[in-house]
Image (cartoon, rainbow, N blue to C red; front, side):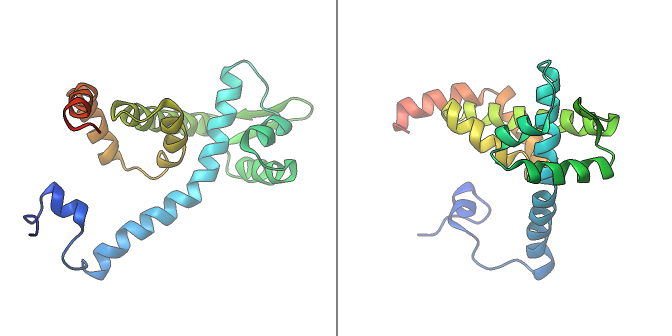
Length: 168
């Protein structure tokens, strides 16, 4: 038995046929664009986090928290400076420009929404934090809005009842 077209079950089980090439390539193009921006967004967000905690955003701190080598951070900081997102001061660390701060704020907002949505689904805090770190770069504005609407409508309470009823 097949699910009725355009129902949640049909969408989960997959379409009956491939969409046209233009429609199909849309998702791949969006994914590539997000992947290119993800690393820049991670650095800018982390720099903002460190600065907002009254810490300096030093190359050594960034390398440690990102789990990469200092030369990797140095290369990225040069790129971020070239793109006008950070300013570097000798012996003082890295600071965000206005454009860098705006990017960091936007990334943080997306991260918070995605993480809150995952928590509302009943995902463990540890897993939600890790998953949100990746998903925040790929989720569209439309999807973020839907996440907010679902949470405002009581998604968390719905999931608690669903877990009790269906033993999820």
